[in-house]
Image (cartoon, rainbow, N blue to C red):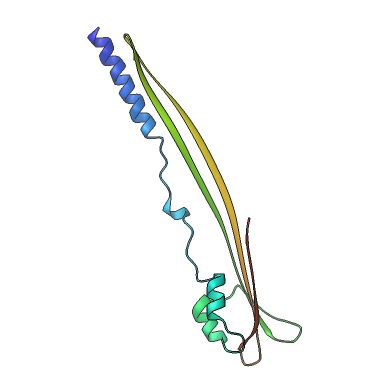
Length: 141
């Protein structure tokens, strides 16, 4: 009789230990990286007719694309996209004793979400490399 209880207890402890190992810790590599390329930074740092290319480079770094428009003004485009995912799971482990029989059961629930963020900054410079105009397009979906 004692042998059976010891076997059942060992099996129950094994199931508990195995179930605890199913937890997935958050991955810090998936955390979104901070960036100076935000609407707030654009509005506080760029002044039309005053901010020049050197200051823009210092604040935001190199642009993704440099082109010329029809008026022969230089146009810089900054583009950032991010894809963020989040998942969670919850589980319940139940251990029960019925007479000489031990048992365990578990249930789990999982959920996942995904978000895509896009940010575009378009800057137009005059012949003296000073910002004439800019536009920001930010979207989350």
